[in-house]
Length: 244
Ligand code: NDP
Image 1 (tube, helix red, strand yellow):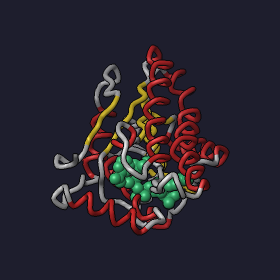
Image 2 (cartoon, helix red, strand yellow):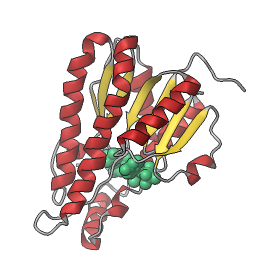
Image 3 (cartoon, protein in one colour):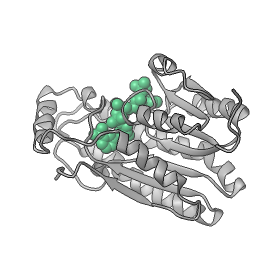
């Protein structure tokens, strides 16, 4: 089967689990050619998505990120949507958290997003079209205990997105933020303190055991993207109704 030429290339980072995997399924179902990036790719290959290049890329590695985009664009044409979704959350008290964890979050959640933007935006400006959606968090809009460094990175996503949005607005390029509330993914599993994990899970219980289904992140991003190019949902904050 040939490439659907009416649908342009969608690049999704952090596609191996959680929101990214839902995004991949959502855009695959609509027939978009895709570039899917994550460090782990074995699970992704098993889906046999059509017109899809899957590359093992760490978004903090500018050179391999760039090479993957070049390879996908040679196959499918220029990137029309980049979803900077890859992210990590390592919760901890600033009083005793290992600074390496702050550095990892800054590298992935901030540098990874900046890398992605720079790698596609020049072509988007030249084409006078294109969309970038950066995945922040409600933790990029308000603060929570043990989230100091994570909130720092997610507040940064809003700031850098809005700055770039203004820089390219007159080129008809959209640079948008989606800020989800708590959802069931692998995100919490990387926190090293079991006490903090337990506390987070207790807090989620206050939502009546119903956190946000990741499929709504995927459908929201598609909605933001499929609106006419002249319309920008600059920021979309979405959570389970019962989240405080
Ligand atoms: P998951 O842990 O399930 O998914 C994170 C994804 O990011 C994985 O595919 C992981 O793949 C990828 N990733 C992590 N580090 C890197 C890296 N250095 N390079 C490339 N890919 C990387 O979590 P979510 O789906 O929840 O997270 C997706 C985004 O949503 C994150 O930005 C997160 O901060 C945000 N978010 C999540 C919320 C939640 O409650 N779940 C709420 C609000 C925002 P791999 O390990 O294979 O590299």
